Image (cartoon, rainbow, N blue to C red; front, side, top):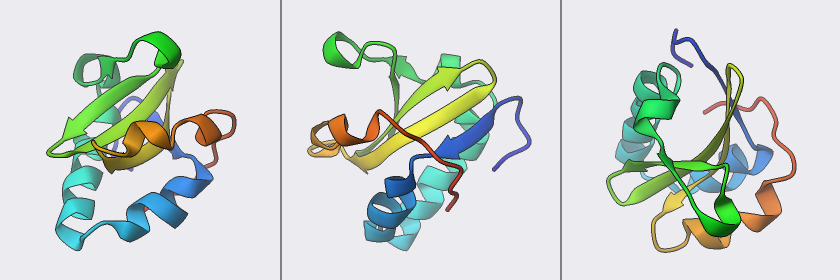
Length: 102
């Protein structure tokens, strides 16, 4: 985690399923984006989502998307995945988050 104004937490399946499937270069790019953008100014860098995902935001990192929610000084990351599949995995993850890291 970066030294930003926000604490970043991850859903338990992010580390187990999402990050483990990524290439090393993609992991580094995504981790850097989280540390430099989401830990510091998530409301500026994250684009608000609509409809069934209202209240959540996305951060685009190349062809990958990070789906997250801002709660006070906490950024909760629910899903990291390729843009073609990331929104399909969202339903089962929105209920619980945990403090897992890369």
